[in-house]
Amino acid sequence: MEKKIITSSNSPTPIGPYSPGVMVGNTLYTSGQVAKDAVTGEMIQHDISAETKKVMENVLAILKSAGMDFGDVVKTTIYCTDLGNFAAINEAYGSFFTGNFPARETVQVSKLPLNANVEISVVAIKL
Picture 1 (cartoon, one colour):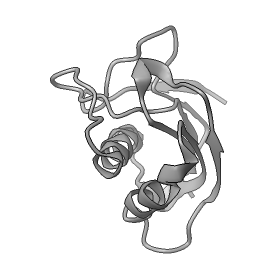
Picture 2 (cartoon, helix red, strand yellow):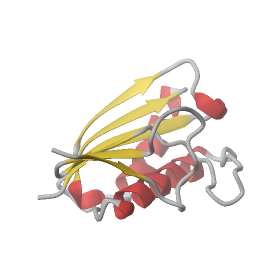
Picture 3 (cartoon, one colour):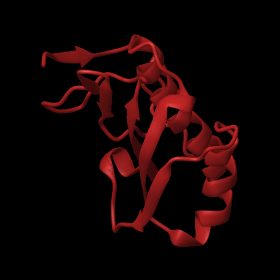
């Protein structure tokens, strides 16, 4: 199987030696996305719901570049710096799905890149 690097001008440029997405066969693995605006380079951090929404928009940009959408996502990982924000993160995250939710774990961590409050990665399969 061929490994293909997936990028998008609508998602932020990586801040390190990694790819936004890697497609192997019909499976896409995304790197964790934070709420960095792809155009301005600024982080969205004024509100956890807005931050989560921007994270999901960045994930969607990578999915679209691979010819996919959230209906193809089978697994997500959410990292957050405060599980006290779980309800708001969950609500914003959930608004991007229309049922048949993927498997998921949510983990509190002490710190995230760029001082983000939430980071999300996904695995998607195009059937």
